[in-house]
Length: 337
Image (tube, rainbow, N blue to C red; front, side, top):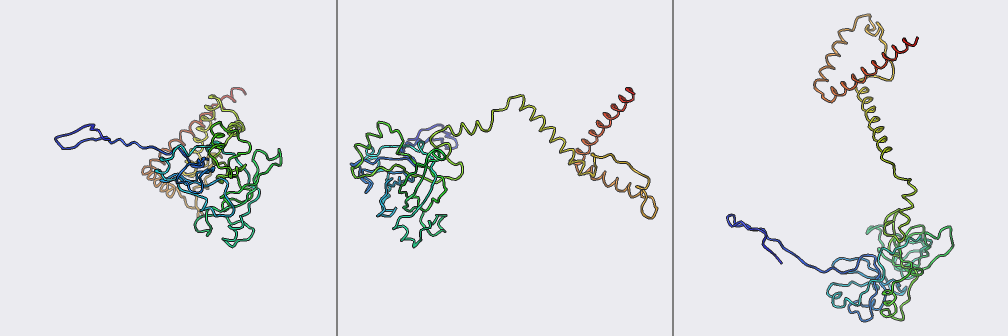
């Protein structure tokens, strides 16, 4: 729709506000979705539990229990908007990505068909982009263990996943732990009524590989973030923060003074004493004229460079304060004596 906001008849211009309304598919990437038995347009995925791989102009789905006899492409389907809205009730959200759990990969072995397709041996080829020469997804038998079970028990799980070319032993991967997840009543109803009887429910569904601490906030069990905050220590009080800021400011001031002194060739850390020989060159001639010339050159530099003049003023003020404090200390020592 469009509505007129303002109009200028003199200049023949108008300000029109356009309003667009759209409906978005209530599915997100990495979600688990149950496709009902009566769904149309889902192909071989009808009556199965599927994983959402991508959401764009079409929703790309793959079964969570792929068969080793077929390749990955034949077990995926793209769900277009018109197909979804015609049978919206046949697509039910099973679990969202907030229920993901961290697993550690113990072993990866490509399925026989995938190994023959790429003429590879028992070693797994890792996908590193289009230039790597392998497809991104490949079926593989993967052995994983819960990250929280390390040091507690030796329970491991075997599963078939489409991430065969992305995983290597030792990687951390996010997945759904269907073996121990407590399902809602709606999810249980979907499994009992919408899934076909020949569908094999897996214990683990691997979703994606992660690097380092990525997606930590999306992993089930937010206590980890609280523990990490606790390890870092308590928050500092306002008084300690003020002291830190004051000390940091003083340190920056000292660094600025030292840099200015070094820039002008001064050494404020040591006392400098001059001797008459300092003003006589090797031939015994006076170099007062040369010194005067250098002084004039330095004064011109100060006039041309405002930053140098400011630094010089700061250093002179600092030296005056230091000499004044030294004189006070000497007078106090004389009084005490």
